[in-house]
Length: 341
Image (cartoon, rainbow, N blue to C red; front, side, top):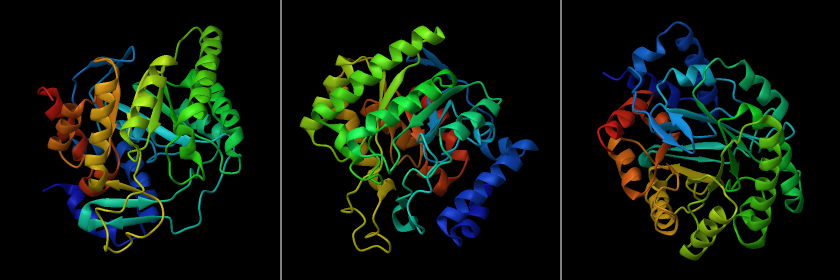
């Protein structure tokens, strides 16, 4: 029997955010004594080169689970081919008032309105530097809630400057629904200006550090075809190396009437699986065949991971699936993709 299946009823009896923190602590302790690998299984070696980086396998951890980069070594013991931590902002911020995370177990889903709660970029970098793991590490950056949207670029540049030398790649998160007006950055002149400035600063940092760190853009599932096509064109124009598709959805069509369905925030898990795949398919049609797409949203099984690849993703990421299926999901997905996707 899956050991996580025994623990899940206890965890689900707790407040979701309390259960999250308790689980991270337990993962740290289990990794230190070597027990975590017994639950997760042997890591899958299925190397693939993407963005000029060598990934151990195609299955990664999505940003949001480890916002402060404080659990990297323990999470690595679960067998991920890569790990993304954050979202981090220049200054520490508490996020939105609690409660701010809700389970919808009837649909294997979560709603969260965390609001980029994190300890700030200095604490984040200190945690990343302490980590011993040397696999592919993505650092996900955002803007402070108190920063006006007109000054958002300042926050992204400040974070990029600070995390650059410690990242395998940097993801620019402009798609959380839980920071006011943030999604305005996904379109038109705002995105054009943001990507142009990030690309220019990346060029300066590459010269300074002697290393070009890839940049990825994380987008929402709540985009129409014209918006997706415009984003794809800007990704190419500005030399952005990858796109992460997708973040959580603000739609409630698939969970209407369920307890907590009307809570504000982003919906993740099974309900975002098809919306994410729709965006991935549209991106794949609009971008060059070898352009990297990191598919995330609603992966709860090996078949789901294969479907993300079939839709056009190059790599996949997990988060909510871990809450509902546990650490064994990582190896299940990685083994399925190693057999040919």
